[in-house]
Length: 336
Picture 1 (cartoon, rainbow, N blue to C red):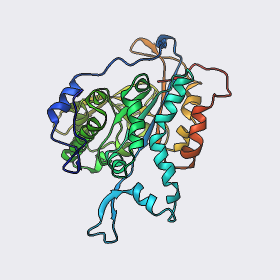
Picture 2 (picture 1 turned 30 degrees about the vertical axis):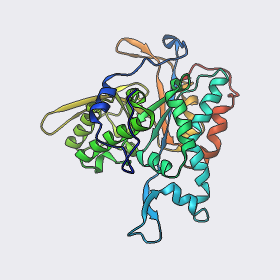
Picture 3 (picture 1 turned 45 degrees about the vertical axis):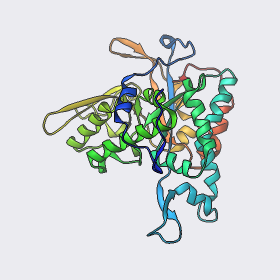
Picture 4 (picture 1 turned 90 degrees about the horizontal axis):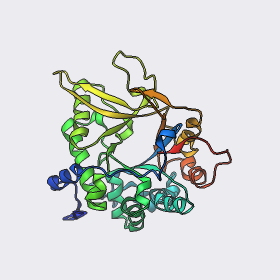
């Protein structure tokens, strides 16, 4: 595994090792383990992703013109009496807790699966705060067997840049900056396994040239698939998707006739954290059955993403829902 410095001259390492990053991505992705699950017999599946983000703000001092740039989470910690800032310690635990839940579930003989999406600003801010315990917990489930087989990291933009409103050249820099930073924290081998991309705010550009550059950036940065919102995409003839629980091809054509495409996994319904916090994807998947795709019967996949820390349901209801056995009888769907 190639080693990169996490910080260079006191700043997060977000550029300068393009060759090393490209080599890691080209190394490809290892075969995922499914605990000997017979996918051919699987009736349906569900997948959940947790999006984690905190912005950086000029709040490290009374004078905003000279204040240090710190994490919004650090400001919440320092001002617990304002607004909902009393939730800050719980937020910090939410960023760490997958490193606790996954080993616990594996030790019980279960097969947990989760996708994680952390912005670069959140990671940098937590390191500034000295929350090395969070990084230790995440490193365990990212780099070590058997825990790393339960986690699928999603690529993101370093500063939570939203594709439709970010200049295309800047958006590409954000994508590459996140890859640099992730590799510097968890290693280039871990980066080589990151193949899915989670757009900030689930936002897709609808201007043809920007949409084309968006997909082109993802492909050229080594991503194999992208998570999209059900109601932001449509079929070539303008109709809505017939089968949102199946993979699709997202194809974008520029005004110059250039085309770029990537596999799209469709996130269904809205963005309410209650869907993930209460494990709604599992219950939806129970009512689905295999469908035909390209001449084969394949299991449909119910996919949801939610803020991993925000809101009472995610903070308080999610842990018991994933840690306690379901009172319902065993069913077909399994987490993928």
